[in-house]
Amino acid sequence: MQRPFLSVVIPAYNEARRLPGNLQKVLDFLRTQPYSFEVLVVDDGSSDDTVAQCQAIAQGDPCVTIIENPHYGKGYTVRTGMLAATGEIVLFTDADLSVPIEDVNTLLPWFERGYDLVFGSREGGGTSQRVGEPFYRHLMGRVFNTLVQLLAVRGVQDTQCGFKAMRCEVAQDVFPRLLIHDGSQGPIDHPMVTAFDVELLFLAQKVGYRLKEVPVQWFYGTESKVSALQDSWRNLNDVLKVRWNDLRGRYNGIKRQATIRE
Image (tube, rainbow, N blue to C red; front, top):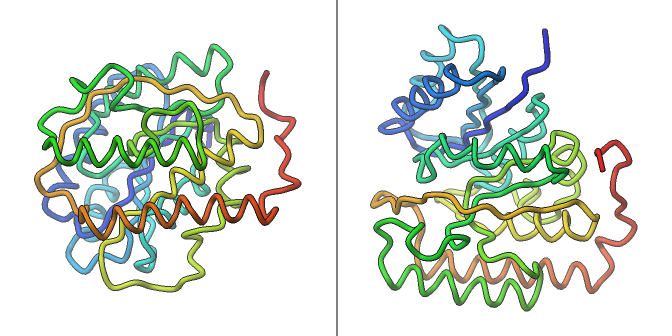
């Protein structure tokens, strides 16, 4: 089969209520675009009917693939989908579509300008990009980003927006190198939001890929699985792990693949 231009990876955990409708929104939009596509839904060991409902859609649409994972957390779930994707450009986006799928077309033109990893930012156009977000959540995000810039990823205003696209070769190069949330911790028994994005961007910068941060719309979800205190501590711990891994030389010897277009 001909290689699709765009792969869309959607990680999901107990999303039976909203994902089927949002998956249909993604498909309806992509069918209006001039490029070919595939959609990969990667289930993170859901205990509800997420898989069954998405499989019902996939049975009638050859562009949709469902991948079932044990419950290892979002980082491992995204990793699975990104490595399974075959498109020239691979995007991962959240199941709640907090960033509208239409905003993928604000990312794609930057690849034509030579960038390798292009990602959405809720800060690139000011706080007006963050629609409906409580003030305390925005403040926590700004404090976290300050720490991220000091310890790991410099020059990036928003590492945590779940709307990131990259050349397929970049995904195949960087994701296998991620050391945290690689599945080695085994299954978990709760939703787990992590800072795997920080390690992803840190390694991409270290290797020498060209990164571009692009403002997108972002709508705060009242059904978010984020726990303000627990996940903030876990995310900070992830950032410290990235820094510690780098200081120990665990990321040394990483070289950029020569197949990426300059």
